[in-house]
Image (cartoon, rainbow, N blue to C red):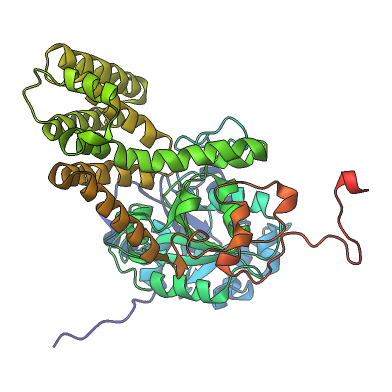
Length: 518
């Protein structure tokens, strides 16, 4: 039986240690190293090009070389506190006259495995002759894009900043909006090979501890080689994994994350992903748009009602059309029935085949528009739909009414703010059309009842998916189908059971009044 080897200590010869590190990483063309002579002793600094800030690295090299005799004395790093894996307050402040302390935050590394991980994380690792450990300099500067406007959740009003793929930058966007010590970013790491950094977000004193424990327990079961996207972790923590409905909310807008945290929810940011996952989530939340909160509350009511109507229309509209034309013609008004029947005269295919063919063609054009470059993608999807629909009607393959119904279904799905719901409606509309072709309107009603029953049975981290509609929580109705004015929403959502239920307490001993009551 092969014995498991322990960690390899750092050799006390700097060049040997650097050669060992290079051997473990080769072939690695972006590996760089710099040798320095410090008072007769050799020092070797190793880093990966492209992962470090070159300016900070050069400053660190100058400060290290300026250490002179102090840096060459045995135990110099130990006196800085690096022997215990930390830097002293003096070393963190920066260099002092004479170069007695390094400029950059650093930590000690006593094993080669830890040195390799530090280099891969964007640190510069320094080896010095005669020292049984190395130091990792914090000079990390990962490549990434700058802060841009939200692309998947655009709004005409409100903030225009979106998350990027940099975890530190995303946390800075949140801290800019939440200047409170209660905002916590708990560090996590996923991927046995990728070692992807993540942060569990919550507000201490508001978030329910049992909810935090539930999320932590699920995150501990994430065992993968690498995390290339947020969806890898999301599928591990999902409720109802075989349900098509999303039980987590994904957003790229920092202000939405702040608003969710203030409600008592929990967020998860992962390095390399420009989105944040929020749990728990309910179906009414997925039908709310960020712009609802950037306009007058009276104008948000009709828009929210429209989205609820469009959600069900995107699933049921083609199936209702097929059911009425195939089985339930008696439910249609006589003038409408005569007009629709005349349109179908000469169509060689049954209504269900006609509907499925048009739906597949529409989905193919929409998928093609998504995969093409943004400059031509929208043009291809819109022009292609018009050309194919008009050509199919002129050729007598499809009726004009079917083209209108399928186009209206596509427009209805585009009104939904959550991408997960859009994908669900695109999938379920095929199932509803198939049931309508087999059982007519009765099958559509039965499947709709089964869908509602499924929605009621789902939970997201212990919260009912249809809350506050089922079960009914009247105090939370202020921000469900309607949106009450901000001064009327003084309580946080009860469905999340926050520790602090009041949003703003005002001054002690004083009663807050509206301006018209003063």
